[in-house]
Image 1 (tube, helix red, strand yellow):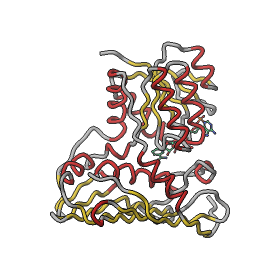
Image 2 (cartoon, protein in one colour; image 1 turned 90 degrees about the vertical axis):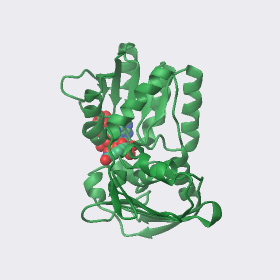
Image 3 (tube, helix red, strand yellow; image 1 turned 45 degrees about the horizontal axis):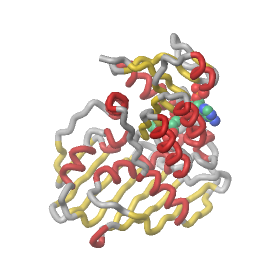
Length: 308
Ligand code: NAP
């Protein structure tokens, strides 16, 4: 088996919680270096800047970009220009134009680019997609609620332009929705609740429409004080489907179904390895399109200031 040397850029919460263990468990990858301003990972060579890494380590063929989305474009462009394969954490960028530009640049350079959506690899999602295929769907209700202080402790970037606010987790729900729905949807209305001292929303209500009167209502809220609710309920003419716990559990007509899988991040690295081997790319931008539409069409309502 070919082993790809890979570097993680931005060693924060998600890199430590998920990327480092997933790379360690995947025989197709070896964590060869990091780019971190805060020190990186014990026992792994660290560079202060991506420029320094790209110059010093031409043997590192792939980079996994785990920094906040607002600064991902510059790093991805640099890595593509240096001929490296690129994995993008979600959301893949801060604007649609920049991720389209990355897609074009990767194509021109002949490198792999992968816009990852980790929630699509939750264990119940593939089976949900299969069950919904060919069914007449009448409505969908999404509740995606959590405590921002638990999941984004001290992260100032989520409240700044490009940080997406509650769409940072909400886009995970949209990534599942766009994966399992057999039809395209479009946003029809949105209300974004923005703390008076922040640039991004702490909560959002979204309405979508689809073919034949299909409606989708989504509620994203970061103000839940304990636990989390990450669920999608789909009503069809042939019965009801529920995905709960972020897509990890699947219920049909209220009965839990057995589902299995390697786990979200192991599956992402397996997919990245397959794309590299095939010299292919995967940039499904539909979840980001819905978020952009919400910022474009949504009514902005000022709510209480947020203090971490
Ligand atoms: P984080 O804890 O703030 O970590 C991001 C890391 O990126 C920082 O620790 C820093 O690493 C680097 N960084 C921060 N600001 C930067 C800047 N201006 N320029 C360059 N590098 C910068 O954030 P996170 O929670 O890991 O989230 C990062 C990405 O992962 C986001 O896109 C998020 O949506 C996604 N994600 C997060 C979670 C979660 O549960 N938190 C889950 C899934 C996906 P160094 O100090 O090493 O330079």
